[in-house]
Amino acid sequence: MLAASLSSTASRLSKSQDKFLEDLSHRAFLYFWEQSDPGTGLVRDRASANGGRESSDFANVASIAATGFGLTALCIGAERG
View 1 (cartoon, rainbow, N blue to C red):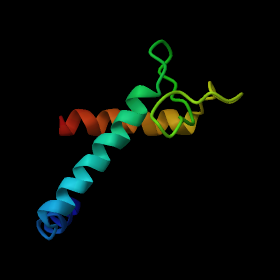
View 2 (view 1 turned 90 degrees about the vertical axis):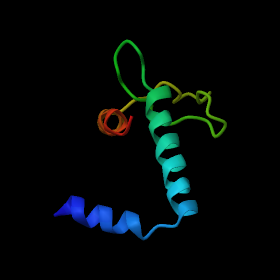
View 3 (view 1 turned 180 degrees about the horizontal axis):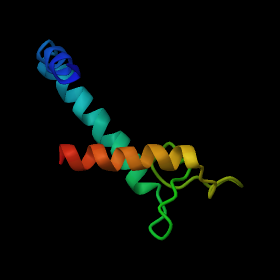
View 4 (view 1 turned 90 degrees about the horizontal axis):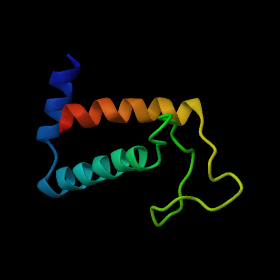
């Protein structure tokens, strides 16, 4: 049921809207990919606006919430290639 609803919605998007959503999805995935610690898998809660690591006192703070979203992003990224 949900898949049919999603494909119905996708068919109503213009090419530019679809391209925008694809770019947004890719950038969101990259946040979780780039901000995760390779050793622990924990995802940092924040990054600087230019895509680099945050340079404040809270630069290395990770949470279970960000890590959970990161795990979901990995699953979606794998599914979408």
